[in-house]
Image (cartoon, rainbow, N blue to C red; front, side, top):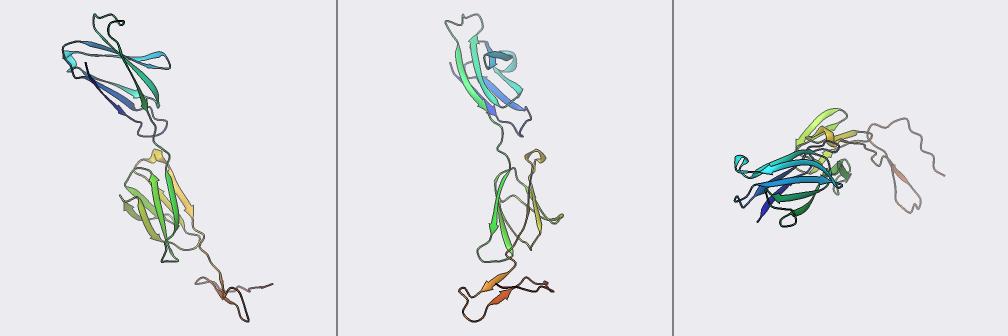
Length: 193
């Protein structure tokens, strides 16, 4: 006797929409299925000719489940199959970012967990939508970048950009020092000690 068991994990954290689909590959018997969590029965379904020997237990939380399968009219000491499955919740949204190698104004955002498409906003204005998990955009000092996924329940990544705004060179200093300041900065009096 063989069974096909398919587990569908949660689509969002804290939303109990996991599913277990069970199908009997041998249709010569009617089967009773008890789904247990922590030793307690939480659902009972059957596999019969009327449902094509296939049924689904749904609205399940993230957890470990035991599936007990018996044959109608056969004592459990003669036939009982037990399968253990896990329904998982998705990982939280995770984005890493940094400066691109060849630009002082471009930043990359690598989305490691999250559902595409990704919507990118800079200072509240929509920049782009991407199915790629690696995104590069031009940023300036104090820009605020937000990355949204296709599922609002996955959260939002938000980062304020702090570019290197002042550069002193050469290092070490011999006779002269040069200070490079960002565009548009005026009225600054540098003090060196």
